[in-house]
Image (cartoon, rainbow, N blue to C red; front, side):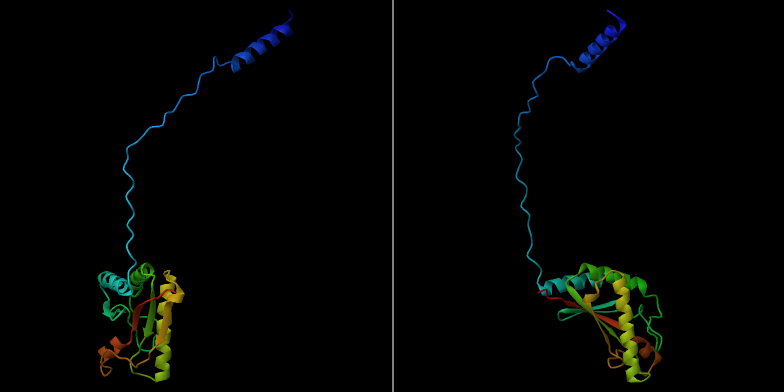
Length: 194
């Protein structure tokens, strides 16, 4: 036997031993086990809320969450006013107060209660011409709408109106009353889905 045959024989032996695992065995048998588990509980789905139930539920949460706002339930709608947070200087279209945090809180609630539409009504005091007041109040409402959209509310839920000076809530004869009258109001309405 020469060296080459010896090397080839050794290689064959090595290869054979690598692939020889010994006798084959029968696969392990897995016997199915029976478990005495109770059936899963049936899911209880409540009936959808009616329009009044939905608005009442929203009203309670708006009232408790928006401490800085006046929140009133009027028939089947919610009226919201921020008398100390959304304030305007005369003839200005952007609030002169720290209004972003209250609007962010309002937007979170509006995003939760998606079955609602929102009317934003801008108002002025009685100083100046009616046409100018109506334009200023419309721009006030539009600017607030833009902020709420920037916070993630859908634009198609909003309608804005410029009321001018036709709906005062305080006496326009005093500076304090005029300050109160320069405002925006929110009306939250149930949206009937068709």
